[in-house]
Length: 333
Image (cartoon, rainbow, N blue to C red; front, side, top):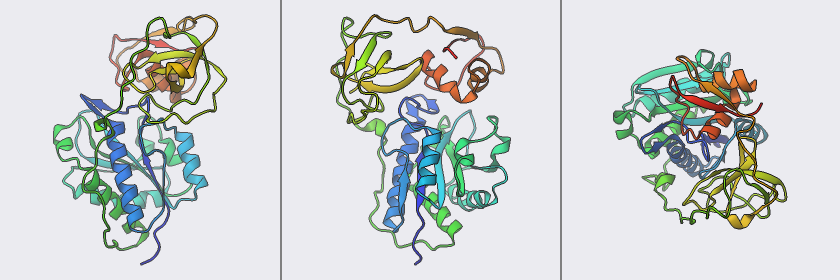
């Protein structure tokens, strides 16, 4: 058999960005299950894989595009779950990209064969956001697969990460004109990261550190509150502000600049300096009206729709869903 091409397998969302949320279900957990299963399968077939994350950590669009392009992958597959009251599976491709459209058309039938309603192959020109960055910022054929609806009981009752991975893998093989290799040992089930026990860190004492405190980063820090290991050192020695506190997690103190979280640490990894700052001193308030979206609000106040996550972080939102009458604090521009 011909050698399999190198593949970029990207799990949507992660870290402080949970993606769509329905009850106890977080999109970031399920996308990671499928991405890890697909990567394992592709490697078992003899291919190479690059991943944006293999655990629960932050993941930006620019970094993903750079990873795919610098790694010279032959195709990009980004994995998501849908939300909004619908059912079924769909795949998006970049407007005007015929190769990506062919990739989407090769993969979608495999997903539909799992029993999901066919919502079609979709041009991102029709997306309410205007486009998907991962489809426009990568050089090779790229698709964004919305596997099913996280807020549909029927869709989630059928959810199986390994079956989704196999469907995606077979669709990719079809696109490359390759036959399915003999399967090697591949896990028959995938555990969501949410099911993995995380050793709890006691909540900080109110006299220790609090939101608004200015701190100096004095040791390695983590990319998310639930990360198993603190490995980052880029901001070591810098002065930051405590933005949020996540009691019961390994690294409960979220620090950053403005409303942007740049890391998570234990109290021992931070040293309080100066006086506390009033994080809301330059904030504005937006009264949500019917038809508003976080994207449009971000565009209006911050000059870019891509900064909507700053509004989510500042207001403690776990999803992008907002309602009329809601008051949202807006970070400084």
